[in-house]
Length: 176
Image 1 (cartoon, helix red, strand yellow):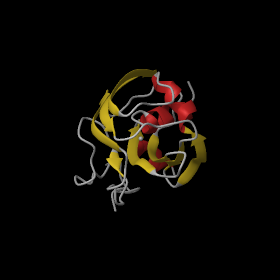
Image 2 (cartoon, one colour):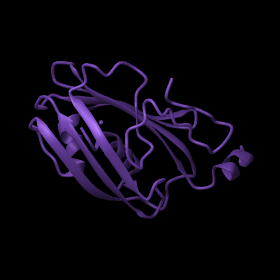
Image 3 (tube, rainbow, N blue to C red):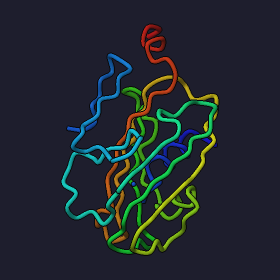
Image 4 (cartoon, rainbow, N blue to C red):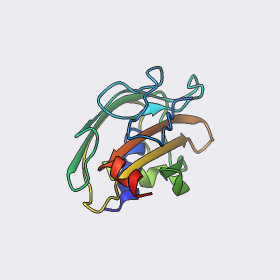
């Protein structure tokens, strides 16, 4: 499975000043006001969420942080206030340090197939459990994922961000 699919699964699994970008260390800064409950690096984006149609109750990753070459189990739960229909989309950005790896607008209904769902996603409670095989070849470093998710009518579903560190970041930084 490609790294982009893994990162999309992380960011779209539930749908899905808090970035804490600190490129001088391997620490991941967490904004507790935006933190999604559970054992994961997911946070809400630093903007208003009053109109979001998805309320995320909890997301757990095992292991957290994810490890290259191991299975990642994603468990998520939330509530949709409205059904999500074909035409919904996710604006996805993935960075490796300061380098933008992915910046794309993707069909949400295609992406949720990665977590064994399909559109329309009916309103109500949602629970997802998905195991993702992470490749061994993921380069060491800090990855930042941003997923801004919208309905076909451009109404906000949710906006999520996460930082994931793979491997020994200090060794990578010393080589730069």
